[in-house]
Length: 269
Image (cartoon, rainbow, N blue to C red; front, side, top):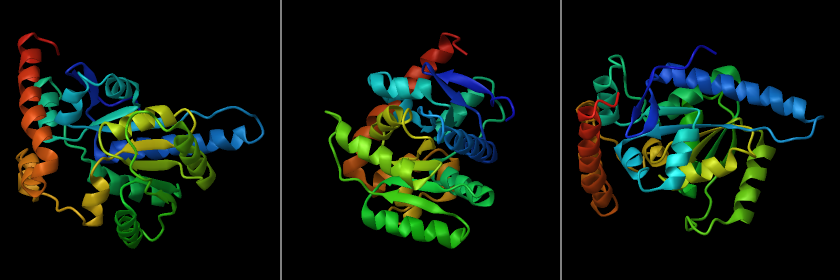
């Protein structure tokens, strides 16, 4: 694999200026290496440590200041993509002029295409049963050669206390399926904490994609492309789901802007 993409620290956490092609290629290469390691481990006992990919937006980066588990997951991730347009602007302000958005739903599609071409089985963990049904139908319709080895919509559980027995069963099911790339749609920050706990016992690349399941399955409308390019996707989503998202966008977006402005003023590049 080529050297890591350019990266900068935004609000204290590394964000990688990757692209869809680069992120998908790295993910497939990591998945293939994990497959080879798992095959060797069949005769040599011992755990095979997986990898994690996070997609970072303003909500995640701001929330990490008050959520130690999320901050740890961010700092321990193998790749952190700029999911939100304001995060891309921040990377550019920090000197990475070529930074582009690597958005969870589109990254899911790009990675599935690369996985299908390479014969790497994928899995889906999260969402609701009807969402997973429609998502699998879309993914396999677009790529008939894609092998979806695992798909599970776990019942909603509180973030704390952690249900260790349930997580052990989930890890065992993913291992048994043979999936080497698993998309996680549990929502931030729950999915990032779950991934950080599970990566040590699942020989796969775990990718936290948040609302991508609902968006790709057609259960939630996506913002028009021009709104996404303008960095106003948050306003569209807020209009669609005001009760659920008002607190997130009206609290975290302004706070991110103020904190990042302070970072620039202090010269922390």
